[in-house]
Length: 551
Image (cartoon, rainbow, N blue to C red; front, top):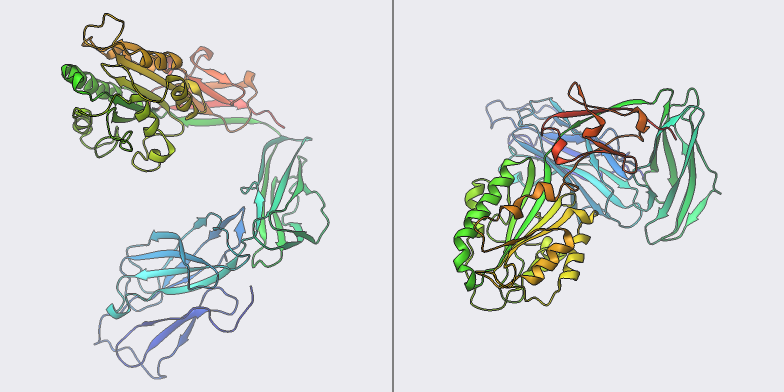
């Protein structure tokens, strides 16, 4: 950063209405911390009979704002240098791609202490992810403190102190640094760090230095200085040797042109003499997202009483089991563009929903439609599409949960979409296709007493291993027995920190050692799995003791 003898920002806060007393706050010539200029008359004294003494909050950032692993670690220090206590106040960290002010972006906003007495100090510890891309080296960041008990005419005045031009051109991949994990004594581990120019002009790397002694890390040589054109990437070899005295901790400092800060990347490893570990886990509920698709054609009116009774029972059954559920409803008839929107507000029910049973009853109380045809498959596809999942249905579908789709219809689907492509769309939503299940409560067989056979529904359910139940039966509970049907997906998994030597594994629930028949250890995923029949109680603690497999 170029030093300048003049402050980058000035803000004047009036401390008293008596005389010309004031304090001007700016930046010192190094770019850090406030500078105070007392512009009072030499003999001016506070007037104790005047208005109440006001707080004056200032900010310093002793740590600077250079990034480590593409994150900016800031430790702003807020001090009340005024003569009265502060009221509620807010700290904002603001940046702009260029010289501020202009195009400011709020990078952090947090509520401060309710009050700071005169002379009292408060600290924040902040980590801000990498900034949006912009011109190299001209992102500036500053702090804004908004106290509430300043003079009314100065309510819009912000206390701006601290400005830094930041690294915004050179990126390291992986951004979080290189972390090898356990490396046994006498062994080594190797990887590579990719350095990329993410901006639209050339940059030059002038030095790559390690900053800590006896770390055990060595970095491969590359010709320096090294110029990277826009988009160009260069790999740097990184090796760790686990030897006596190796700490396994290193910061790699990379100096480059047009940046106020070097790029600093963390390297770590765990040198081991003994590789014994114990990992504790708290048992959380299994997670399940349930989409109920209700045929709202006039012909279903005869089944409305059964529909309400059974779907209320579905909510109650989910609530009584150790399941973290999302429960939503869509209907099958509607105008183009209106299909697939989850009903009611809130648009899905979960365990924590206030008056959940009542909200669920409102959601399943559907009005019959007099236009259109049964578009169950089209509605399902729309409901679980990126478009609606990012707008009206946002939050319903979670990444690491099982998905259960339940159809309730007394006539077959008449969508343009067929069963096979819909099954493919549903299973693509999850990394594990077994985590998707379709059950259908529809007409069964040509002799169905109250409904047209749901042939297409049956095909879709069969493709996912689901259940087809007769809608003419008053009891639909077989379609709601989700735990046995989804047992492979609702297995409770615990992932260990390090690679486990399987023969060394000991698993306990509290102080009780578990039998190996109570769980399955998956070496590929380094995880323990419990099926519903052997699942430890929600809220209990599991511990896994093992010998780590060193690299």
